[in-house]
Image (tube, rainbow, N blue to C red):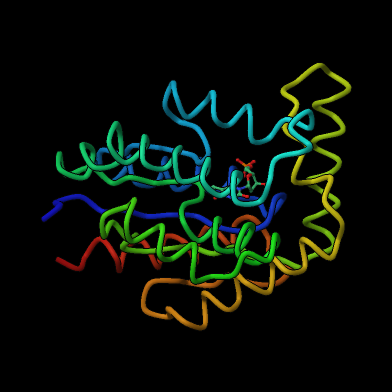
Length: 218
Ligand code: TMP
């Protein structure tokens, strides 16, 4: 039995997760919680190498099944090295993406379907499910534009080459978006859906309301 809380943030690229995670982390720390911040793919030495392989636009030929397997390889490492030990130490783990991303991007976007993702999750993640998932789904078009602008800027300034998913066609991102909605409908007890054109402060307030409730539960 784990003692901490496992909170994940999900959403399309450009949905504002990074800003919200920083604000949530500050909010938790101000209230005396010890936090561990993670992101997927990445967050461990092995995971960062897998991230580079997965997100680089040079990896154009990766088969969808290989892509999914690498996402789970990264996750297995993150669980063993960081997530489980942090939860056992009573910390609040805030993770930028988890298995819902694999279901949305590989299951939905790549059309591998949910079943294979959920089966791999069962085997590889050994029953580790988030206590709370905050799903940020602002309108599709503005999120995509933001993500593409950000990557263009990173390319111009010799930042990391993490373009591969943003280069996908709009139809791919629409399938991701639809799969996220399907997950939210299927698991209303775990997933809090934050939709539409809300400001940063409004989204933060919704997040802290949901997190307060989650933390208060034993
Ligand atoms: P991000 O760290 O900037 O959110 O980028 C990670 C990218 O990887 C994002 O485009 C979503 C994608 N991804 C998947 O396709 N499947 C997964 O399981 C995860 C964790 C991420």
